[in-house]
Length: 471
Image (tube, rainbow, N blue to C red; front, side, top):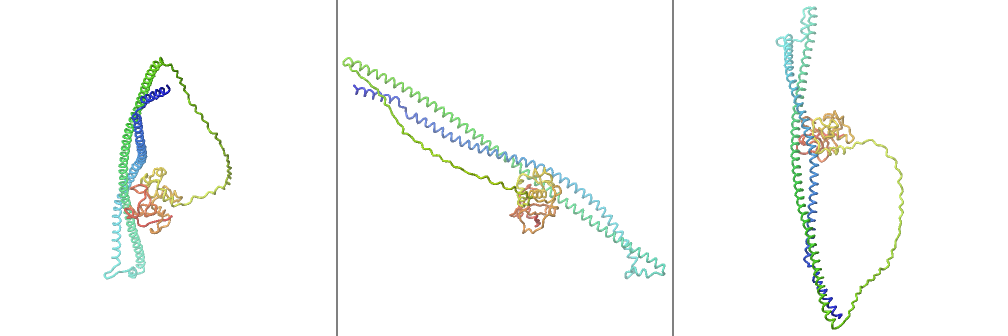
């Protein structure tokens, strides 16, 4: 009977196993969905990284755009200021031309006076000449007929000598005045004309700066637009991937529900089959019991698991360390020292203005100009030296002419960083900068604002004549 029961139990277990087992395809389907989800999440991570990079790029472009907008604003103001200076210079040229017109009249009058004096002197010469030779004043005196005539002649000679001397002195004074006036007015006109040419050249260069800045601003805006489009595209892709993840998660939920329902159905079928099988067996047993009464006792023993855990001994170690620190003795405060000259500071002080400054004729003579990077060449040099503790004149009275009075003139072959270098532009020593080494100098140039330029090639090589001064 026990053998029959064992066979019966085995049959039931085999039947249950057949119904309860889950097809492997279901597990593989869940795994596939999870793999897809993981892959898409990886793609989303990559896209998010690209979005972050593009956002950082846009932020950088926006910062550059802000700086460029400020530079364009400085350039616009510089154009207005330099245009005003050109207008003023044109007015000065007009006044100088009027002075020249007046001088032409004065010259005509001087020439007329000189001509009259020439006639007088000619008559004097004729009066004291005889045919064939000159007659001097002594012969005039010796030709007197009596003492009274002699006295009369002496007085006349003295008068003529003084008159001649006066005429000659006036003649020379007028000639000198004429020459000085001509030289002064011609120099003034030449300087103003050269300045006008220089200023017009500066204005053209500044306008070029503005055009370049505007073009750069457009390029930055285009790059920002392109980056924004990339971000929009990436976000769209990310949204698509997010939708795919959501769909996969929904499919996983549905698959799990389907598997759970399938398991429940199989479990119910197995239970029903087991109940049917047991009922059949019970019918057989009932039929058999009419012939033989057999009592079957079934004992179910539940194994008991006894587990014993070994005793764990914990050993604690105690360690203590004592650190002793000694407070340093207070050092005496250093005595204040006077600011020292530092030419290297003068060389590098202007670096912060490179790319965000503008040339303004007469600029750099107020703190507002300095704060906004508005310099002409001499004002920049004065400011740079002041940052190194070196005084080369007051802010309001600085010029290339005043800077020439500082320091010692040295040979160009002995140039060192920190030396002043002069260039002949619209006039002798019309531009100044600070030598930085390597054949280059830093200064406020009309074409760039504060910048480092080469002295060994291009425009500046042609106008550098070797005038160098060391402070």
